Length: 425
Image (tube, rainbow, N blue to C red):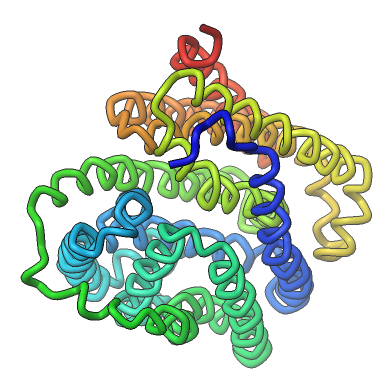
């Protein structure tokens, strides 16, 4: 094993960033095309409804996979050269995930009218929820395969899959949006992740021994306990954060309306264009590194090396986006979305602290610090929702962006206090 002193985190991080930047560039281009199409065909009102469905799917994906993604990444990375242990990890996570997926699918299907009314503010979208229930199995198998590829640190393969599925999803979405407007967009949201499996399988099944590792006889109950420690954290996020966002959107609708909610959702989509670059770096690079470090000194070295390399780029990007916000709104959306300019200062400031926080928060998952993760996650959700509701009541939809900033700036301070011994001693 390489000594930490012989390892240059900046060099490898820059390598991963350069590979990852290809996928991010493709996502930016496809995101630009899709944003323009959405602005033309469904406008702010439709965008808000689509945003609720996306948030709901984030929860469903985690719940249906039993929150095993990070656990699979960790233990595949740890045992990738030990076929016996690897088979235990894969078989255990696959079959428990299958049971979770089946239960989730049934709940979605049989209670589709309830979910349609709660998530999409109307029972008329029941067929969308039932389509999601039917396709969830394909989505979770794809999710499982991506975790394996990530665990093996196959950065190039991961990037190829990201680029291919992004382009494929864009084409399918544009066709459905063009043909069926809002209904087509909602269908695209639920079926494109499922269809992505067929692209992933062309890569994953080139591993000759992969299928053999999934025999039910390889299930190991010892790994069940280890994986559940990761799933508890992921499931907590799934049942707290997306529902919090949905509740904030619904409150904007109650106070002002669908159009104003669409402005806030459009701001979130712009944030997601660059946040996906950071979150993928955290998943691909930082999480495996933090899982491997054994001392406080190594942790501190990894964290500050990541900050030093990444944050100057983040600051430059956020400043550029703020000063040219009027241009980007017209470029990415349309002049119909001009009222959202007032959101930028609060949203971008919140994104800055969100990135700082995410780097530290990965230590919770890397070292299975469940108690700390649960406490800080619940606290941040309470702060986010309560501050958003307070400021929405006072300032309208702009209050949602203010609440977002308060949430993540406070969350970052909480994490600094929690990890003070790791960072400053």
